[in-house]
Image (spheres, rainbow, N blue to C red):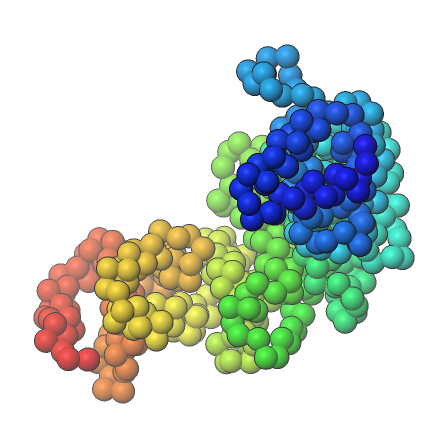
Length: 474
Protein backbone atom coordinates (compact mmCIF):
# COMPACT_ATOMS: atom_id res chain seq x y z
CA UNK A 1 0.00 0.00 0.00
CA UNK A 2 1.35 3.41 -1.02
CA UNK A 3 1.78 5.62 2.10
CA UNK A 4 1.95 8.79 0.02
CA UNK A 5 -1.37 8.12 -1.70
CA UNK A 6 -2.89 7.13 1.62
CA UNK A 7 -1.60 10.35 3.20
CA UNK A 8 -3.31 12.37 0.48
CA UNK A 9 -6.52 10.47 1.13
CA UNK A 10 -6.43 11.34 4.85
CA UNK A 11 -5.67 14.97 3.96
CA UNK A 12 -8.80 15.01 1.80
CA UNK A 13 -10.93 14.24 4.88
CA UNK A 14 -10.32 17.88 5.87
CA UNK A 15 -11.67 19.16 2.54
CA UNK A 16 -14.42 21.77 3.09
CA UNK A 17 -16.58 20.17 0.38
CA UNK A 18 -18.74 17.53 2.14
CA UNK A 19 -19.04 15.35 -0.97
CA UNK A 20 -15.28 15.23 -1.50
CA UNK A 21 -14.76 14.53 2.18
CA UNK A 22 -17.34 11.74 2.15
CA UNK A 23 -15.72 10.03 -0.87
CA UNK A 24 -12.35 10.06 0.90
CA UNK A 25 -13.85 8.57 4.05
CA UNK A 26 -15.51 5.78 2.07
CA UNK A 27 -12.23 5.00 0.31
CA UNK A 28 -10.42 4.80 3.65
CA UNK A 29 -13.12 2.52 4.99
CA UNK A 30 -12.74 0.21 1.99
CA UNK A 31 -8.94 0.16 2.29
CA UNK A 32 -9.05 -0.54 6.01
CA UNK A 33 -9.86 -4.18 5.32
CA UNK A 34 -6.73 -4.67 3.22
CA UNK A 35 -3.56 -6.14 4.67
CA UNK A 36 -0.78 -3.57 4.94
CA UNK A 37 -3.06 -0.66 5.81
CA UNK A 38 -1.91 -0.42 9.44
CA UNK A 39 1.85 -0.42 8.71
CA UNK A 40 1.27 2.27 6.06
CA UNK A 41 -0.66 4.42 8.54
CA UNK A 42 2.12 3.99 11.11
CA UNK A 43 4.62 5.13 8.50
CA UNK A 44 2.60 8.30 7.90
CA UNK A 45 2.31 9.01 11.63
CA UNK A 46 6.08 8.76 12.00
CA UNK A 47 6.84 11.01 9.01
CA UNK A 48 7.65 14.47 10.37
CA UNK A 49 7.41 15.93 6.85
CA UNK A 50 3.70 15.12 6.70
CA UNK A 51 1.31 17.80 7.96
CA UNK A 52 0.53 17.51 11.67
CA UNK A 53 -3.24 17.39 11.12
CA UNK A 54 -2.89 14.47 8.69
CA UNK A 55 -0.69 12.50 11.10
CA UNK A 56 -3.15 13.16 13.89
CA UNK A 57 -6.05 11.97 11.72
CA UNK A 58 -4.09 8.79 11.02
CA UNK A 59 -3.45 8.29 14.74
CA UNK A 60 -7.16 8.65 15.53
CA UNK A 61 -8.04 6.20 12.75
CA UNK A 62 -5.45 3.71 14.05
CA UNK A 63 -6.82 3.92 17.58
CA UNK A 64 -10.39 3.32 16.40
CA UNK A 65 -9.38 0.47 14.09
CA UNK A 66 -7.48 -1.35 16.83
CA UNK A 67 -10.13 -0.80 19.50
CA UNK A 68 -12.88 -2.03 17.21
CA UNK A 69 -11.31 -4.75 15.08
CA UNK A 70 -7.97 -5.87 16.56
CA UNK A 71 -9.67 -9.15 17.38
CA UNK A 72 -13.23 -9.93 16.27
CA UNK A 73 -14.94 -12.66 18.23
CA UNK A 74 -17.10 -15.29 16.60
CA UNK A 75 -20.10 -13.99 18.55
CA UNK A 76 -19.82 -10.46 17.12
CA UNK A 77 -23.17 -9.05 15.97
CA UNK A 78 -21.58 -6.55 13.56
CA UNK A 79 -21.39 -7.99 10.07
CA UNK A 80 -19.17 -5.19 8.73
CA UNK A 81 -16.28 -5.94 11.08
CA UNK A 82 -13.04 -7.18 9.54
CA UNK A 83 -10.34 -8.31 12.00
CA UNK A 84 -6.81 -6.95 11.75
CA UNK A 85 -4.66 -9.48 9.90
CA UNK A 86 -1.94 -11.42 11.70
CA UNK A 87 0.71 -9.69 9.58
CA UNK A 88 -0.59 -6.23 10.52
CA UNK A 89 -0.77 -7.18 14.20
CA UNK A 90 2.85 -8.33 14.01
CA UNK A 91 3.83 -5.04 12.35
CA UNK A 92 2.08 -3.09 15.11
CA UNK A 93 3.93 -4.99 17.82
CA UNK A 94 7.30 -4.54 16.16
CA UNK A 95 6.89 -0.83 15.44
CA UNK A 96 4.52 0.77 17.96
CA UNK A 97 7.00 1.36 20.81
CA UNK A 98 9.52 2.85 18.40
CA UNK A 99 6.78 5.08 16.98
CA UNK A 100 5.93 6.24 20.49
CA UNK A 101 9.55 7.14 21.15
CA UNK A 102 9.72 9.38 18.07
CA UNK A 103 6.30 11.05 18.44
CA UNK A 104 6.73 14.62 19.69
CA UNK A 105 3.05 15.62 19.49
CA UNK A 106 1.06 15.11 22.69
CA UNK A 107 -2.28 14.47 20.85
CA UNK A 108 -0.61 11.79 18.73
CA UNK A 109 1.06 10.20 21.78
CA UNK A 110 -2.32 10.00 23.51
CA UNK A 111 -3.84 8.15 20.57
CA UNK A 112 -0.87 5.77 20.32
CA UNK A 113 -1.08 5.11 24.07
CA UNK A 114 -4.72 4.03 23.63
CA UNK A 115 -3.66 1.72 20.80
CA UNK A 116 -1.01 0.21 23.06
CA UNK A 117 -3.46 -0.37 25.91
CA UNK A 118 -5.93 -2.14 23.60
CA UNK A 119 -3.22 -4.41 22.21
CA UNK A 120 -1.73 -5.23 25.61
CA UNK A 121 -5.13 -6.11 27.03
CA UNK A 122 -5.62 -8.74 24.30
CA UNK A 123 -2.11 -10.01 23.60
CA UNK A 124 0.01 -9.80 26.78
CA UNK A 125 1.86 -11.94 27.65
CA UNK A 126 1.25 -14.94 25.41
CA UNK A 127 1.10 -13.11 22.06
CA UNK A 128 3.65 -10.45 22.99
CA UNK A 129 6.35 -12.25 25.01
CA UNK A 130 9.09 -9.66 24.43
CA UNK A 131 7.01 -6.67 25.49
CA UNK A 132 8.52 -6.27 28.96
CA UNK A 133 12.02 -6.79 27.63
CA UNK A 134 11.46 -3.97 25.11
CA UNK A 135 9.92 -1.71 27.76
CA UNK A 136 12.84 -2.23 30.15
CA UNK A 137 15.25 -1.37 27.32
CA UNK A 138 13.42 1.91 26.73
CA UNK A 139 13.40 2.77 30.44
CA UNK A 140 17.14 2.09 30.61
CA UNK A 141 17.93 4.29 27.62
CA UNK A 142 19.91 7.54 27.79
CA UNK A 143 17.56 9.08 25.23
CA UNK A 144 14.78 11.07 27.01
CA UNK A 145 12.26 10.36 24.22
CA UNK A 146 12.85 6.63 24.58
CA UNK A 147 12.52 6.83 28.36
CA UNK A 148 9.26 8.72 27.90
CA UNK A 149 8.01 5.96 25.60
CA UNK A 150 9.08 3.41 28.22
CA UNK A 151 7.05 5.21 30.89
CA UNK A 152 3.98 5.21 28.64
CA UNK A 153 4.63 1.53 27.90
CA UNK A 154 4.59 0.94 31.67
CA UNK A 155 1.50 2.89 32.68
CA UNK A 156 -0.75 1.71 29.83
CA UNK A 157 -0.63 -2.03 30.62
CA UNK A 158 -1.07 -1.19 34.31
CA UNK A 159 -4.26 0.67 33.37
CA UNK A 160 -5.33 -2.31 31.27
CA UNK A 161 -5.01 -4.79 34.14
CA UNK A 162 -5.61 -2.59 37.23
CA UNK A 163 -9.11 -4.00 37.89
CA UNK A 164 -8.09 -7.64 37.37
CA UNK A 165 -6.85 -8.41 40.86
CA UNK A 166 -6.61 -12.16 40.14
CA UNK A 167 -4.33 -11.67 37.13
CA UNK A 168 -0.58 -12.21 37.50
CA UNK A 169 0.11 -9.76 34.65
CA UNK A 170 0.22 -6.74 36.95
CA UNK A 171 2.80 -8.35 39.20
CA UNK A 172 4.96 -9.26 36.19
CA UNK A 173 4.78 -5.70 34.83
CA UNK A 174 5.55 -3.97 38.14
CA UNK A 175 8.28 -6.46 39.01
CA UNK A 176 10.13 -5.70 35.79
CA UNK A 177 9.59 -1.93 35.63
CA UNK A 178 9.12 -0.47 39.13
CA UNK A 179 12.78 -0.69 40.20
CA UNK A 180 13.63 1.40 37.11
CA UNK A 181 10.74 3.79 37.72
CA UNK A 182 12.00 4.33 41.27
CA UNK A 183 15.50 5.14 40.00
CA UNK A 184 14.10 7.54 37.38
CA UNK A 185 11.94 9.28 39.99
CA UNK A 186 14.79 9.63 42.50
CA UNK A 187 17.11 11.04 39.85
CA UNK A 188 14.57 13.61 38.66
CA UNK A 189 13.47 14.81 42.09
CA UNK A 190 17.14 15.36 42.93
CA UNK A 191 17.59 17.24 39.61
CA UNK A 192 14.24 18.89 38.85
CA UNK A 193 15.75 21.06 36.14
CA UNK A 194 16.22 18.00 33.92
CA UNK A 195 14.38 18.17 30.60
CA UNK A 196 10.87 16.66 30.76
CA UNK A 197 11.22 16.04 34.52
CA UNK A 198 7.59 16.87 35.42
CA UNK A 199 6.20 14.76 32.55
CA UNK A 200 8.33 11.79 33.61
CA UNK A 201 7.42 12.12 37.29
CA UNK A 202 3.74 12.43 36.39
CA UNK A 203 3.88 9.00 34.69
CA UNK A 204 6.03 7.45 37.45
CA UNK A 205 3.49 8.26 40.18
CA UNK A 206 0.51 7.55 37.94
CA UNK A 207 1.90 4.06 37.36
CA UNK A 208 2.32 3.46 41.09
CA UNK A 209 -1.13 4.65 42.03
CA UNK A 210 -2.90 2.63 39.32
CA UNK A 211 -0.95 -0.50 40.26
CA UNK A 212 -2.21 -0.20 43.85
CA UNK A 213 -5.77 0.74 42.98
CA UNK A 214 -7.55 -2.53 43.83
CA UNK A 215 -4.83 -4.57 45.52
CA UNK A 216 -1.41 -3.96 47.01
CA UNK A 217 1.03 -6.42 45.55
CA UNK A 218 3.23 -8.40 47.97
CA UNK A 219 6.32 -6.73 46.48
CA UNK A 220 4.84 -3.30 47.25
CA UNK A 221 4.33 -4.16 50.93
CA UNK A 222 7.97 -4.95 51.66
CA UNK A 223 10.11 -2.46 53.55
CA UNK A 224 12.53 -2.43 50.62
CA UNK A 225 9.73 -1.07 48.43
CA UNK A 226 7.45 1.03 50.62
CA UNK A 227 10.22 3.07 52.27
CA UNK A 228 12.01 4.37 49.14
CA UNK A 229 8.75 4.86 47.24
CA UNK A 230 7.17 6.68 50.17
CA UNK A 231 10.24 8.85 50.61
CA UNK A 232 10.17 9.70 46.89
CA UNK A 233 6.51 10.77 47.07
CA UNK A 234 7.14 12.97 50.11
CA UNK A 235 10.15 14.56 48.40
CA UNK A 236 7.93 15.26 45.38
CA UNK A 237 5.35 16.96 47.59
CA UNK A 238 8.01 19.01 49.36
CA UNK A 239 9.68 20.01 46.09
CA UNK A 240 9.29 23.79 45.58
CA UNK A 241 7.75 24.64 42.22
CA UNK A 242 8.13 28.10 40.75
CA UNK A 243 5.98 29.00 37.74
CA UNK A 244 6.36 32.78 37.37
CA UNK A 245 3.95 34.64 35.14
CA UNK A 246 1.28 31.91 35.21
CA UNK A 247 -2.26 32.42 36.49
CA UNK A 248 -3.79 29.88 38.85
CA UNK A 249 -5.87 28.18 36.17
CA UNK A 250 -2.76 27.55 34.07
CA UNK A 251 -0.76 26.32 37.06
CA UNK A 252 -3.53 23.84 37.93
CA UNK A 253 -2.95 22.16 34.54
CA UNK A 254 0.86 22.29 34.59
CA UNK A 255 2.76 18.98 34.54
CA UNK A 256 4.52 19.79 37.82
CA UNK A 257 1.19 19.97 39.64
CA UNK A 258 -0.06 16.89 37.84
CA UNK A 259 3.02 15.06 39.14
CA UNK A 260 2.36 16.36 42.66
CA UNK A 261 -1.30 15.36 42.35
CA UNK A 262 -0.36 11.74 41.61
CA UNK A 263 2.15 11.70 44.49
CA UNK A 264 -0.56 12.95 46.87
CA UNK A 265 -3.06 10.45 45.43
CA UNK A 266 -0.64 7.54 45.88
CA UNK A 267 0.11 8.36 49.52
CA UNK A 268 -3.57 8.88 50.32
CA UNK A 269 -4.49 5.57 48.69
CA UNK A 270 -1.82 3.70 50.64
CA UNK A 271 -3.18 5.05 53.93
CA UNK A 272 -6.93 5.11 53.31
CA UNK A 273 -7.19 1.66 51.68
CA UNK A 274 -4.27 -0.34 53.05
CA UNK A 275 -2.69 1.53 55.97
CA UNK A 276 -5.53 2.58 58.28
CA UNK A 277 -6.50 -0.43 60.44
CA UNK A 278 -9.29 1.38 62.31
CA UNK A 279 -11.16 2.06 59.05
CA UNK A 280 -10.32 -1.14 57.17
CA UNK A 281 -13.25 -3.40 56.15
CA UNK A 282 -13.02 -7.07 57.16
CA UNK A 283 -12.51 -8.18 53.56
CA UNK A 284 -9.25 -6.21 53.38
CA UNK A 285 -8.19 -6.76 57.01
CA UNK A 286 -7.63 -10.47 56.37
CA UNK A 287 -4.87 -9.64 53.92
CA UNK A 288 -3.51 -6.24 54.95
CA UNK A 289 -3.95 -5.95 58.75
CA UNK A 290 -0.26 -6.48 59.66
CA UNK A 291 0.83 -4.03 56.96
CA UNK A 292 -1.81 -1.51 58.05
CA UNK A 293 -0.76 -1.61 61.72
CA UNK A 294 2.87 -0.98 60.82
CA UNK A 295 1.99 1.71 58.27
CA UNK A 296 -0.30 3.58 60.68
CA UNK A 297 2.32 3.77 63.43
CA UNK A 298 5.51 4.35 61.43
CA UNK A 299 4.76 5.87 58.04
CA UNK A 300 1.41 7.66 58.34
CA UNK A 301 2.77 10.10 60.98
CA UNK A 302 5.56 11.08 58.57
CA UNK A 303 3.02 11.78 55.83
CA UNK A 304 0.95 13.85 58.25
CA UNK A 305 3.96 15.96 59.23
CA UNK A 306 4.64 16.81 55.59
CA UNK A 307 0.97 17.60 54.92
CA UNK A 308 0.86 19.87 57.99
CA UNK A 309 3.95 21.67 56.69
CA UNK A 310 2.33 22.14 53.29
CA UNK A 311 -0.86 23.45 54.90
CA UNK A 312 1.17 25.89 57.00
CA UNK A 313 3.06 27.15 53.95
CA UNK A 314 -0.26 27.71 52.21
CA UNK A 315 -1.88 29.45 55.18
CA UNK A 316 1.11 31.76 55.65
CA UNK A 317 1.11 32.45 51.87
CA UNK A 318 4.63 31.11 51.46
CA UNK A 319 3.52 28.55 48.88
CA UNK A 320 0.65 28.00 46.46
CA UNK A 321 -1.34 24.77 46.40
CA UNK A 322 -3.51 23.48 43.58
CA UNK A 323 -7.14 22.62 44.27
CA UNK A 324 -6.38 18.92 43.93
CA UNK A 325 -3.50 19.20 46.39
CA UNK A 326 -5.81 20.97 48.84
CA UNK A 327 -8.35 18.20 48.40
CA UNK A 328 -5.83 15.41 49.08
CA UNK A 329 -4.43 17.21 52.13
CA UNK A 330 -7.92 17.73 53.56
CA UNK A 331 -8.86 14.14 52.81
CA UNK A 332 -5.78 12.87 54.63
CA UNK A 333 -6.54 15.06 57.65
CA UNK A 334 -9.99 13.45 57.79
CA UNK A 335 -8.45 9.97 57.71
CA UNK A 336 -6.07 10.91 60.55
CA UNK A 337 -8.75 11.92 63.04
CA UNK A 338 -9.73 8.42 64.21
CA UNK A 339 -6.42 6.45 64.43
CA UNK A 340 -4.76 7.11 67.77
CA UNK A 341 -1.22 7.40 66.38
CA UNK A 342 -2.11 10.12 63.88
CA UNK A 343 -4.66 11.90 66.07
CA UNK A 344 -2.02 12.59 68.69
CA UNK A 345 -0.04 14.45 66.02
CA UNK A 346 -3.06 16.20 64.52
CA UNK A 347 -4.67 17.20 67.83
CA UNK A 348 -2.38 20.18 68.67
CA UNK A 349 -3.05 21.63 65.21
CA UNK A 350 -6.78 21.08 64.75
CA UNK A 351 -7.89 24.55 65.90
CA UNK A 352 -5.42 26.26 63.58
CA UNK A 353 -6.49 23.99 60.73
CA UNK A 354 -10.14 24.80 61.37
CA UNK A 355 -9.54 28.56 61.38
CA UNK A 356 -6.86 28.82 58.69
CA UNK A 357 -7.36 25.83 56.40
CA UNK A 358 -11.04 24.78 56.46
CA UNK A 359 -12.74 28.10 57.25
CA UNK A 360 -11.29 30.14 54.32
CA UNK A 361 -12.60 27.52 51.88
CA UNK A 362 -16.14 28.12 53.17
CA UNK A 363 -16.05 31.91 52.91
CA UNK A 364 -17.68 34.00 50.20
CA UNK A 365 -15.39 34.82 47.28
CA UNK A 366 -15.14 37.41 44.55
CA UNK A 367 -15.95 34.72 41.99
CA UNK A 368 -19.17 33.88 43.84
CA UNK A 369 -20.05 37.55 44.11
CA UNK A 370 -19.73 37.97 40.34
CA UNK A 371 -21.78 34.84 39.68
CA UNK A 372 -24.51 35.98 42.09
CA UNK A 373 -24.67 39.31 40.30
CA UNK A 374 -24.70 37.86 36.78
CA UNK A 375 -26.76 34.68 37.13
CA UNK A 376 -28.53 33.88 40.39
CA UNK A 377 -29.84 30.51 39.19
CA UNK A 378 -26.36 29.38 38.13
CA UNK A 379 -24.99 30.54 41.49
CA UNK A 380 -27.51 28.35 43.32
CA UNK A 381 -26.81 25.38 41.08
CA UNK A 382 -23.03 25.59 41.58
CA UNK A 383 -23.42 26.12 45.32
CA UNK A 384 -25.30 22.85 45.69
CA UNK A 385 -22.90 21.07 43.33
CA UNK A 386 -19.91 22.10 45.45
CA UNK A 387 -21.23 20.02 48.34
CA UNK A 388 -21.83 17.02 46.08
CA UNK A 389 -18.42 17.26 44.38
CA UNK A 390 -16.22 15.21 46.70
CA UNK A 391 -13.08 16.80 45.25
CA UNK A 392 -14.09 20.43 45.81
CA UNK A 393 -12.56 22.56 48.55
CA UNK A 394 -15.94 23.13 50.20
CA UNK A 395 -16.70 19.41 50.28
CA UNK A 396 -13.26 18.66 51.77
CA UNK A 397 -13.59 21.38 54.41
CA UNK A 398 -17.08 20.16 55.32
CA UNK A 399 -15.88 16.57 55.67
CA UNK A 400 -12.99 17.64 57.88
CA UNK A 401 -15.23 19.67 60.20
CA UNK A 402 -17.81 16.89 60.45
CA UNK A 403 -15.18 14.24 61.08
CA UNK A 404 -13.66 16.30 63.90
CA UNK A 405 -17.03 17.08 65.47
CA UNK A 406 -18.41 13.55 65.24
CA UNK A 407 -15.28 11.49 65.96
CA UNK A 408 -13.55 13.67 68.58
CA UNK A 409 -16.57 15.51 69.99
CA UNK A 410 -15.31 16.15 73.58
CA UNK A 411 -12.09 17.69 72.28
CA UNK A 412 -13.14 19.53 69.14
CA UNK A 413 -16.83 20.41 69.08
CA UNK A 414 -16.98 23.28 71.57
CA UNK A 415 -13.74 24.95 70.34
CA UNK A 416 -15.16 24.91 66.80
CA UNK A 417 -18.42 26.50 68.02
CA UNK A 418 -16.44 29.11 69.95
CA UNK A 419 -14.56 30.02 66.79
CA UNK A 420 -17.84 30.39 64.89
CA UNK A 421 -19.35 32.57 67.64
CA UNK A 422 -16.28 34.80 67.75
CA UNK A 423 -16.37 35.32 64.00
CA UNK A 424 -20.04 36.29 64.16
CA UNK A 425 -19.74 38.69 67.09
CA UNK A 426 -16.50 40.52 66.27
CA UNK A 427 -17.11 43.92 64.70
CA UNK A 428 -14.05 43.49 62.49
CA UNK A 429 -15.47 40.39 60.81
CA UNK A 430 -15.96 40.94 57.09
CA UNK A 431 -19.24 39.94 55.40
CA UNK A 432 -17.38 37.25 53.43
CA UNK A 433 -16.11 35.76 56.70
CA UNK A 434 -19.53 35.96 58.29
CA UNK A 435 -20.81 33.92 55.36
CA UNK A 436 -18.08 31.35 56.06
CA UNK A 437 -18.97 31.14 59.75
CA UNK A 438 -22.64 30.55 58.95
CA UNK A 439 -21.55 28.01 56.36
CA UNK A 440 -19.76 26.15 59.15
CA UNK A 441 -23.00 26.08 61.14
CA UNK A 442 -24.77 24.52 58.17
CA UNK A 443 -21.98 21.93 57.87
CA UNK A 444 -22.28 21.00 61.54
CA UNK A 445 -26.09 21.18 61.74
CA UNK A 446 -26.53 17.42 62.22
CA UNK A 447 -24.08 17.41 65.15
CA UNK A 448 -25.53 20.61 66.63
CA UNK A 449 -29.08 19.30 66.63
CA UNK A 450 -27.97 16.02 68.22
CA UNK A 451 -26.04 17.69 71.04
CA UNK A 452 -28.13 17.76 74.26
CA UNK A 453 -26.85 21.17 75.37
CA UNK A 454 -26.18 23.09 72.16
CA UNK A 455 -29.46 22.28 70.43
CA UNK A 456 -31.39 24.15 73.16
CA UNK A 457 -29.72 27.41 72.18
CA UNK A 458 -30.24 27.22 68.43
CA UNK A 459 -33.29 29.52 68.52
CA UNK A 460 -31.33 32.21 70.32
CA UNK A 461 -28.46 31.75 67.86
CA UNK A 462 -30.75 32.29 64.87
CA UNK A 463 -32.39 35.36 66.43
CA UNK A 464 -29.05 36.98 67.22
CA UNK A 465 -26.96 35.99 64.21
CA UNK A 466 -29.18 35.14 61.25
CA UNK A 467 -32.45 37.04 61.32
CA UNK A 468 -30.78 40.49 61.54
CA UNK A 469 -28.89 39.66 58.34
CA UNK A 470 -32.11 39.21 56.39
CA UNK A 471 -32.57 42.98 56.29
CA UNK A 472 -28.89 43.74 55.66
CA UNK A 473 -27.98 45.67 52.52
CA UNK A 474 -24.48 44.17 52.35
